[in-house]
Image (cartoon, rainbow, N blue to C red; front, side):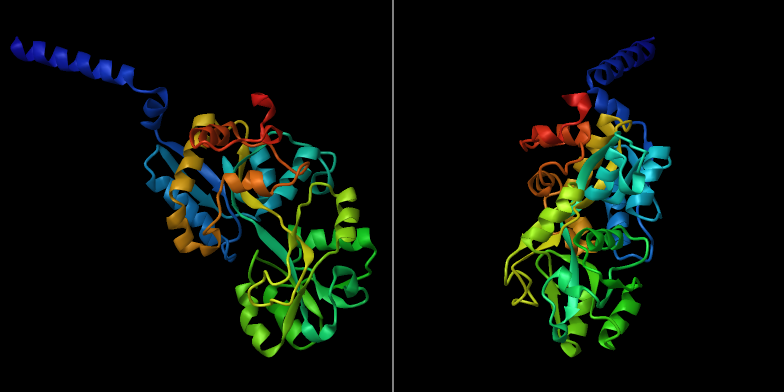
Length: 340
């Protein structure tokens, strides 16, 4: 009889404890399985994707993330819309803006449900050229052979759009990085576009620079004004002379800076999104060990700092919750419609 009484008391105590637990803690007791869009497994960025999934899974917050290989930005956005991915990485702000507005790659097919979770870093779609080519700006490439990047990549498409707007008449020769480097070294093209860190030359070109001196060229203020009149969602940043470590004589100029990060549909529950953001930010040192390019970047604060007025994509309520918890002000222009 005493045992029965004791069991009843313990049982009642356990019920009381569970009842007092926050709803989010109870929800975490049930593991949520998530498919995360990434990029091609051959891309250097894939290491970032895998590291991101690992820190979320290891955070023990009730989430189990599976990395799914994809075609990166545009492919990830389409699969978010279709519900194939619960959230996705490797999506740049300009591509997401195209989908929100139903323009360019998503012409006539607007989808306003995309929401930003956090950013990876700010990078530059940098224009490299042989030093002996004597070019300093994008329009100086007119009539020359230049590799805008890999066929089908968003950065490649941007270069072609800019060529049309500025009527530069550049002879584009799209190609893989290795093919483009080979063509540059043998003087079959004068230069190439390669996504790079803000303050440094891309690692793949440092050795090339030792035997084939390279410089960096950019856009003028007038170029940027003409481009943004047509494509207002595309962000540029000003690069001061001396700010690129290996090429101190390059600049001043403007360069394309497509801010890349993670996004989801607004249908992703707020609490799940919050746990994704929190786990990623707290696990950033481990992510940086696998993908050093994220080191020094604020996945939340830098989103609000670097995305220019008019180019913003709404953030997820889960990100808003995390930002408020950390005392980070969320500018009104980033708030999603459901929170205005």
